[in-house]
Length: 169
Image (cartoon, rainbow, N blue to C red; front, side, top):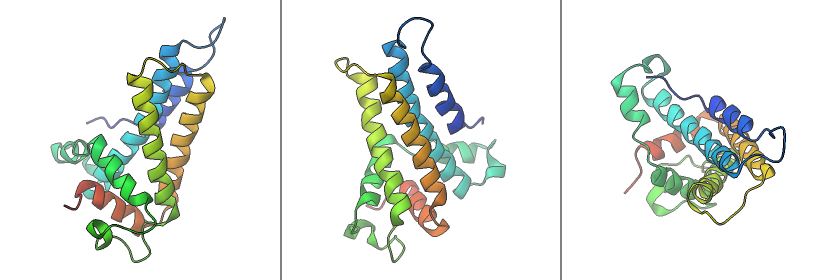
């Protein structure tokens, strides 16, 4: 399995908003850049889950692919909404570290929700007109969110990934 590299998706998004020789980038390119910014973040978390629970050395196996493909956008949104909370819900509290998921995971979660909403608007709402700066902000937010996730301590990252793979009922 060839894992999609988040940086490749984000680099592609940046290329989409390079101004052409005349005029601004096309709306379709700006919209695709916003969408690719979210998908860079989405594939980062899919890779993180599968690397954590199956292992980097197993990326070519069907088990890795199974875990990679097991995360739905809705589940990601729901767990991110939970992660943003200052006080965990009763549903999740037992599975979190004593001090919660920490500010880096909270910031990551907020960015995921924001970028998912921007992607939905860019992909499905024909009314708004997007500017190059909108796409550049989305790309920067995705890169920043990935950096925050990586800076979170291991226990907080693993707790978040566990909730994502095994959402409590």
